Image (cartoon, rainbow, N blue to C red; front, side, top):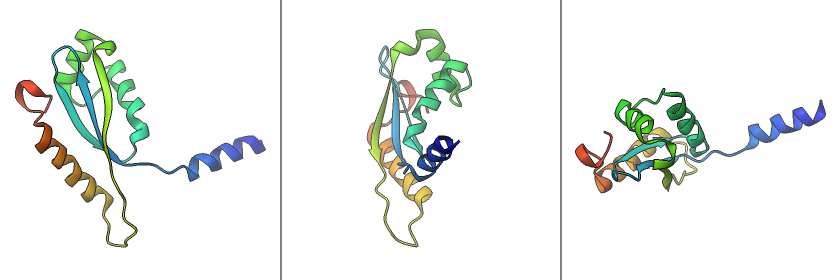
Length: 113
């Protein structure tokens, strides 16, 4: 029982990193760019795709068509958090995501937006 409490405590103390990630289709070069408050949740995105429940239907369709081996997951940027009472993580993350969207332009034939 003590081991379980110890593991729960470790989990609760584990720091999460917010950031921007990309899912790249290696067959046609299309990319999906998004943000997350916890970059460790990328395995959850893979799980959603494997289960057929990903939010982007076009990406889900191509995942089903080409298979998991045709896609790569990449962390593009990690949000640098500031120790300030006025620092809004969600707002900063949205701005960082927009920076990457502007840079990579994943629209039309280049992406899944």
